[in-house]
Image (tube, rainbow, N blue to C red; front, side, top):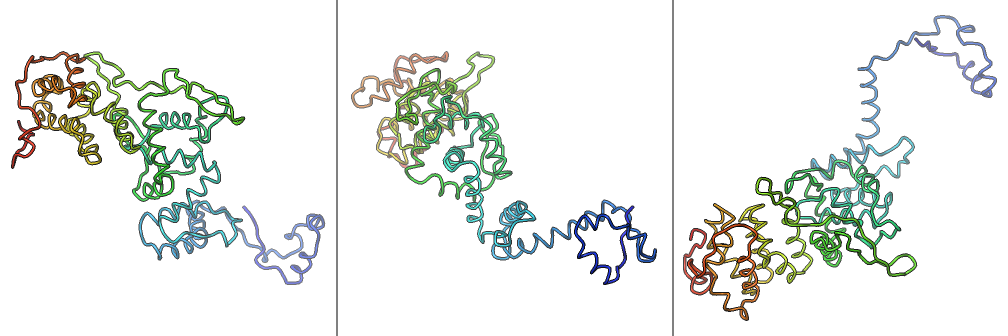
Length: 405
């Protein structure tokens, strides 16, 4: 229980205000020199009253600034961003720094600026660029691997990124990066479209985007995995190479009949990054004209997802005869493959057997057919064409719907 004077006489205030600290401490208690009626008893503050008091104090301090800014951009996301920004203000923050940007994009840019100043511009920009450039998000081990492979900023003697660096960055970004499910695992991605757009404009301009997607292509291809040393130039401009200790990227992690585990991350992300890095030839070779990749993606995902890869490629390069023929073959075989993906070798050989004699004209189709003849899955293989073939008159047939043939 505390006791406080109701009101001291003005002359007492005047005397006390002139005393040095040590003399003030030496004064006798006010209760010994003032009448009892000058004091009032102040009990302990109940919890609910303390909550009201704090709410009022915070409202006076923060609410005015936030509400004034919110009137210029009355959107829910802006209110959330403005509130989170205001929570960072300290009691000693000068009034000139109590500023909220007028738009969502500017306040997100301000957030990125602050994180870059605190943790390093190159590290933050590359980490957020990889997340933004991903198709469905990245797992945190994948992000650490990608940053460990990135030589633009990372040149210590040990070629692995300390995990604590990313943990600190994510802590400062807060709830704007969320975990969600993708490809059978938990990935990190932006929780709102506005963050994706600002991050793209900031970190994925044309040249930067191509390089980021190329780095991610190499990672999901497993180019520098399995002990393969990646070269780099150290701080003394000396060329070196070291193992980055990143995992291999097989199409399947476990191929037992009772427990097939596909590398869904590779199957999903690799074609996407090859396409957006402009490496169409490698996308063609590694994905669209690679029988084992086609079979794994068909078995691990769905025909619809696989057809999306073909459509994305053909939208960029529509005059590729080999890819177009394979695309049509999948369309013709859609009903059978949707029932049993292991029929892929049978469908390819049964429809395109005659193309084995046209290697000069369709080299990649022939390569896929030869791989199908040595398929890793048990199947029935015809020794002649026995199903409707793609191409020819079917391409120009009016009203033709190949999906149900």
